[in-house]
Length: 226
Image 1 (cartoon, rainbow, N blue to C red):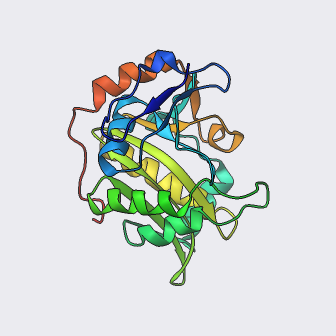
Image 2 (cartoon, one colour):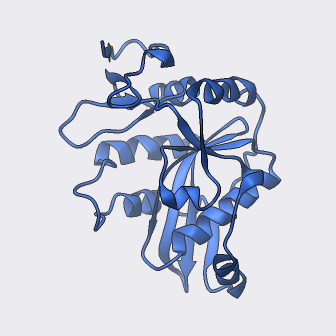
């Protein structure tokens, strides 16, 4: 049975109790407070729901991750990065990036990044937990992505592009920076061909849980603006 969370209880059920269909649905209800979101990611689950639904919490099995040392960059994308037409920054425009990620997509109806979700992650950014990557062309924001950093782990959330390859350039710069900082894993949540092209691959949820326990306690980089 699906567990319904109470607002005064930040606990989550064991990941093994997640449903097989739909894959990974673990719990519903609760709220989007900063404390609950941090507890969720540390536990191994994340929120994902549509406007009008209760908050739904997920822990799919398998879990798609990218190990920074396994990053694959195509020759054409590497050439695009070397051209230097796009400038990448970190933590310079978090609210604008999450708003860009919430924009309508041609391949989907609506967005799961509701105003409530945007406000929740902005609060996490203000606490130094959520971070953004911005991609600029001549001072105009053309792409970006955001996620959470805890310990030596990065939990990716969403990305957007207003021009070809913009989010890809930002993603490569992010992964390379995380690799240099000694981050061990990037959580990509669920499989997409886009992420697989960079080297992301599925691992069993049990292995994901083990890696969480191993790397969450290790201090990670805090100076994202540098």
